[in-house]
Amino acid sequence: MTDNRYPLIVGAGLAGLLAAHAWPTARIIEMSPFANPRHQALLRFRSDAVSKLTGIEFKKVLVRKGIFFRDEFVEPNARVCNLYAQKVIGQIAERSIWNLTPAERYIAPEDFYEQLIESVGQRIQWGVKFKPELQGDDPVISTIPMFLMLQHYGHPLKKCLPDDAFVRKSITVKRWRIPNSDVYQTIYFPDHDTPTYRASIIGDMLIAERVAEWGAEEEYRPLKVIGRAFGLKQTAQLIPLVDHEQAYGKLAELEEVTRKTLLFELTARHNIYSLGRFATWRNIMLDDVVNDIAMIKRLMKAQTAYDMKKEAL
Image (tube, rainbow, N blue to C red; front, side, top):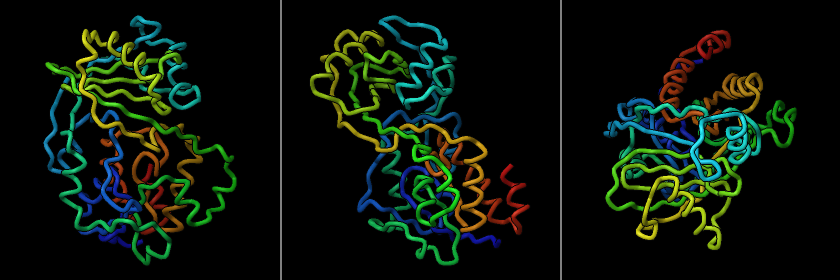
């Protein structure tokens, strides 16, 4: 396999835009007819790797976390963590709620997506849906969901998976401005009587996320619960911002051997390199995307399937 430095990037979401910075001459196609900031949920980073790749300055902060269950704060335990997992994905699985240790994080500016688009937008072809014939002899960096890419190529391994193998949930995000606020905090809500599963204050912005649509009659009570959890005395003073729904919000990971086999087959058979959470179907942060970009560049230089497997380990 040759080291082709001009891949086709499929998808202009955050992962695709990071790839566009890593391959500054690559062409990009995006199914949406125009730029659309799809990710309005909590977005923060473990390191400054994304900042260095994009040249966009991030803010280093200390984030504190807690679990609010039945109107009081509790420590992580099997009950609340399993309730939380079932709330967000419908399965009992390990989630980040177990770790409440205060941690340093890097916060992107609110116009992060817009800055990414501004720097690479001239290379994006909007309103173009991926088809295998668009690939030609070029490698493809795919950021679209794994099951969609498998469908494009009618991959036989896809037929061996159960219909519900790719479990995912859409999420709805509501945001408000908080007057006189400058903290960085996240609270988890495992209780199924509260539609919100996680709420965060990022500086002066309150972000509430839930798996389901917000109903007008349901909105008032959850905001009261969130307000009590954060100690907000006057929730009526919150300034509402535009709501947002993310069709791809949460996922349940595939069994690891199956997942890696599918990814390897896409690369070895079709010269497709998967990048991002839904393309690789695993729970990762954008920091991990930067690491995966480095691995993809090594894979592109591999000459044999053996070399590819060795690089991917």
